[in-house]
Amino acid sequence: MNNQEVNLELVRLLNEWDPFKIGEGNYDTEIADCVYAVHEMDNREDLAAEIQRIYEFSFEEFIPIEDCLSISSRLLLIKENGSCSL
Image (cartoon, rainbow, N blue to C red):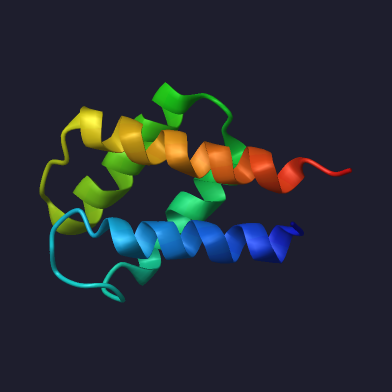
């Protein structure tokens, strides 16, 4: 997978996540920030804390860290699979 394909898969997953149940397509800014964070971080816990911070800043609502840890693991797996080449 090239970088663009990885980014598209990250965006798809984050859109599906919909932590505040307001519908896909309502998190464009947060998704962009999260995709950037995924490329900057490799640690699941650090990424989860950053995701939590991004969404809390925008929506002034708290997402439990367990939810953020779950999504951060899935995002990092996509990034890892995208960087593997034969």
